[in-house]
Length: 222
Length: 341
Ligand SMILES: Nc1ncnc2c1ncn2[C@@H]1O[C@H](COP(=O)(O)OP(=O)(O)O)[C@@H](O)[C@H]1O
Ligand SMILES: [Mg+2]
Image (cartoon, rainbow over all chains, first blue to last red; front, side, top):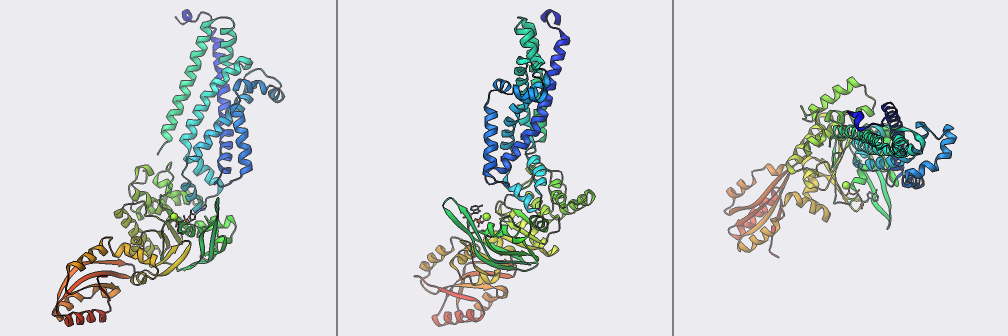
C-alpha cells in the first residue's frame, strides 16, 4: 500500500535522513537554548535601568545579535564555510551544519529571551533584592523562573525554525531530510521522495509544537 | 534603632537634577510604628528605600540597628537586608511560586535548611491567616490575601524592621483595615519596628505612633500622631488631618447651617485623648438653661488616644450661652465659635 504511493522511496535511507534531521535539530536547539539565554540575559541586564546597566556592552551585543539575526540563513551557511572548515575540517555531514544552525538561531532566540525577561515585573526583582538575594539567586530564581513559559514557547518557535534551517543546510550537503528531498527527490524528479520527506518534516514540526505548547501551558501560573 | 542624618538624594534626569529627598534627619525608636505621609512625588518611597539600601543617599548617612546602610559593602548589605524586610503596594510576589514557595523564598536566600524552612512557612501561614491556601498561586488570591503573603514573606527571617511602601494603597477600605490590624498585631506580638509610608491619613491615624509629614523632599512636620491631630501646624498637615476628621461636605454644611440659625451660636469642639470620653454634653444640658443641638460629629481613635470634633448649635439667652461656652473651654476641650464671614 505504502509502496504503491511511494515507489521510489528507500525507507532505510529515509530513516537515516530523519535521524540526521532530528540529530541536527536536537543538538542545535540545546546549544541555542544555552547561548540564547546567556545572550538574552546579557542584553536584559545591561539594558537601561537594569542591574548591570552598561551602554557599551549593550550596544555591541545588540548590534551583533541584530546582524546575525538579519542575515538570511542560506547566505549565513555560505559565509560560514571557512569557519566550519576550520572548526571541523569538513563542510559535509550533519555536524558541519551545526555552527551555522547555532549562529543563525542563537541571536534569534536571544531577542526572545530579552523580551521575556522584560515582561517580568520590576517590582519582583526589587522584592528579591530587598530580601538580600544575590545576583545568582536573582538570575535563576527570579528572572529565569518567572519567565519560564515565555522561554519555553520561544525555544519552541526557534526549534521549528531550526527544522527549516536543517532542510536548507541539507541542500548544500549537510545531510538530513532536506538533503534527501533535494538530491534524491528534486534533482532526480522523484516526487514521491520529496513528498515523503516533506510529510516527515511536518510531523517533526507538529511534535515539537505539541510538546512546546504542553509545557508552556503547564508552566504558566499567571 | 533607625537614624537618618542629613540624608539627601539627587536624581539625574533629562531636565537637570531633581532633589527627591532634601536634608532629612529622623530617629525612629525600637518597637515603634512610624508613619511618613505625603502626596505623590514627595520623596517618601525614595526615603524608605534608603533604609534597606535600594537607594543610596547622595549625601548623609542612614543607620539601621547599628549598621550604616549607606556605607557597607554589598555583601554586608545583603546580609543586613535579611533583617530589614519590605512589603509593597503591588505585593511583588513571584507568580510562578505557590504561597508556600513564595514565603519560603527569603529563607532559601538566607540558606535555611529545608526542614526548618517548611516548619517556619507553616507557622507564618497561620500567623497571617492564610490557613489552607498554602498551595494556591498568587493569581488565585485576592489583593488582601496577596498582601498577607507579602507580610508572611517579610517576616520569614525574623526581621527587626518592617518597611511598608504604600502597603494598603491598592486595597479596598475594608481589606485595608484588616491588613492594618494585622500589622499592629505583629508589632505588638513580635516587637517589630514598622516604618510605613502612605498618602492616606486614615492609615496613620489607625496604626502609627508617630508621623512625619513630607513635602517636596523635606520633613515639614513631625510628632506624636495624637498631637499632630490636635494641633497640625503646617497647611499641608492640616489638609491631611481634615481627610479623616472632617468629611468633605462638612464645611459647606456648616456654612449653610449658619444661614439657617439666625440666633444662638454654632461651636466646633475638638476632643483630644481623655476628654473624648467625658460626659460633656450631658453636663452642658443639665447645668445651663440652653438648647443644645448636635449638628455633626465624629470621633476617631488613634494609637495614642481618641480624637474628634463635634459641631453644636447652642440656643438660649445670650449670657447663658456665653457661660456655657466658658464651661466648655474650661473642660479642656478645643472650642471654636463658628461665625459667618
Ligand atoms: N530612579 C529615579 N530616577 C529619577 N527620578 C526619580 C527616581 N525615583 C524617584 N524619582 C523622582 O523623585 C521624586 C520622589 O519620588 P518618590 O520617592 O517615588 O515619591 P513618593 O513615593 O512620595 O511618591 C519624584 O519626583 C520622582 O519622579
Ligand atoms: Mg511612592
